[in-house]
Image (cartoon, one colour):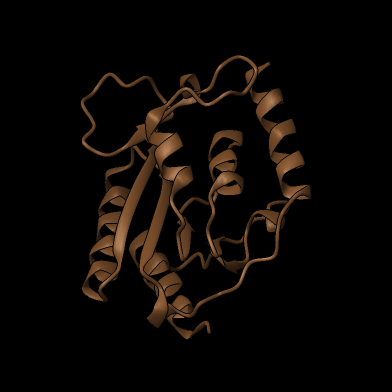
Amino acid sequence: MRKAVINFKNRAQLKKEKSRQNLGYKNAKLVGILFIGGNPEKDAAVFSLKTALEADGKVVKLLQFQKIDKTQEVSLPSFDEKSFGLFGQVQSSDVKEFCAEKFSYLFHLDINSNPYTNFVLVNCEAECRIGIHTLGNESYYDFMIKEEKNLNQQELFKKMLEYTKILA
């Protein structure tokens, strides 16, 4: 039931979308990165992207969705299905704080999204939401990168950053 309520809220929020303006990469100050954690290769690629953004003078905030219960200690802000109440109310302070940020860019670094990461996407006040192209999820993003099978995750994220720098 929780997923159904979150999906309903996501669709309703998308209908209320306001127009956003892209400030250009040079003028961007705060960048968010949203991703599903748990894959060591992907986690390393995420931190590589974070380092590249910080090298360009950007302040970067991360939020990680965990597919499984938080059995291991995670140093990053994170959330899971249980971060939402039965009727879709946010119970996680990490999600509330992340959604309250006014990001210049919000990177979503997953090919497969879920209702919970989509909730964060539609509720963040990001000027430009960037993600990997997947059929059916076009309305969640302002800019999408096509996944190329010959690229590993680090190369894909690097390509996302390269194209983002061209925007403006």
